[in-house]
Image (cartoon, rainbow, N blue to C red; front, top):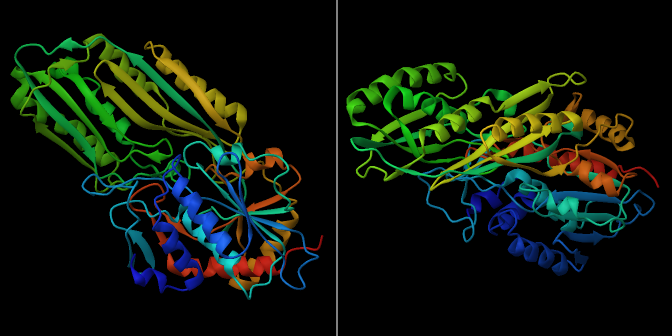
Length: 487
C-alpha cells in the first residue's frame, strides 16, 4: 500500500483507510474484513461483538465530562462495490486496492476505490482509537452487504443498540446533510429459449460497447449517462430485418447498483451483408454518439469479425420479443419529486443482461422515495418482460428513509457546519439507498442523520475521494461529537 496515502492529512483517517483497503471486502463475502474490524476493536481493549449476520458492534465509553450526553451510534458498511476496467488485471478476492494521489484526489488503479463507504468506516475507526477527542458513549455499527441487499441493516435485531442518535457516514457531497433517502427493489426477468443452428452462409461479429463512465445507479442516475445495455439493444433492434442478424450471446453490466459501462454481444449476419454491415451500422452509432457527446465523450462502439462463427443463435421470434421488451423497459429517471427541488423520486437501472446457451436474464434495480411508486414502476418492468414470456421476480425490497425536518441532531449539525465553513449546508434527501430507513424500522425513536466527504464516480473505476474534503469532513465529525445534546 502506497505510503503517500498514509501520509495524507488527516493521517488518523487516511492511515485507517489504507489499512482497511488492504483487506478484500466484496459484498456477501465479508468474512476477512469482519475479522479485521473485530481484531481492531479488541486490540483497543473495547467491547466487541458480532451479531447473527456478521454485523460488528464496538462500544467505547464516553470521555471524561461527556457522560451526561446522549449516546451516539456511528454507522458505516464494510463491503464495497467491485468494478474494474476491462483491461485491468485484478482479483478483488485476493488483492488489496491499489491507490494513488492525483492532485486533490485519491484514486485506484483501474478499479473502484472503496471510499464508498471505506472513508466513513475509517473515520469511525479513528474515533475509536482516539485518546484526545471529546465524545459521548459511542457504539460503532459496522454493517455488511449494504451494496447488494442491505442484508446487515435488514437483519439487525431490535434492542442490540443503546444509542439515541445515529450518525450515518455514507453520503458523498461534503456540503450536504441528508435527512432522507430512496428505497429500492430488485426486478429480475428470466426465460429459456430453444437455440437454433446458425444458418448457412453466415459470418460472425462481436459488438462491443465501452468507454462509458458508469456510476452509482442512485446518485448518478439523473446525469444522462449512457447505459451499455440500452445502447446495445438499439444496435440490435432492427438487425434481423436489416442484415439477418441473430444473437448468439450478450454479456452486459455486472451489478444492480452500478450503471453498466460495457456490453459485448456475439452475433451472426447473412454473409451477403458482410461488407455493408459495419458501414451501415455506423449511422446508428453516429446518432448514439451525437446524443451522448456531452455526457459520454469517450463512448466507443467496436465491430469485429469473429474468426469462428457462433454455432448456435437465438431464434428470430424469441429475439424479436427480447429486443422489444428491452426497448420498452424503463431506464433512468422515471419521475422527479414534487416535494423536493432537483430530487429524483423514482428511477430504474437496467443493470445486467446475460443471454446465451438458451437462457436469458435481465437484472434491474428500481428506486423510489415513494413506496407505491417504487412498486408501480416494478410492475411496469414486470409487464414488459412477462409479455415476452419471462418469469419475473420482484424481490429484496427495502424501505426509504422519511425525512424528519424537526430532527434535534439536525439542529445541532447546521450551526456547526456554518461556523466551520462560513456558509449554510444543503439539507437534502438523496436518491441513493442509505441504511437509515431500514435501521429506523427497528429503532423508530433513534434520531438519524447522514453526511460524509466528497466522493465522485462511486460504483465505477473512476471513483475518487477528495483529500481537501476529507479534512473538512473529519473536522465536522469531531466538532459534532463534542456537541452532542444532553440526555
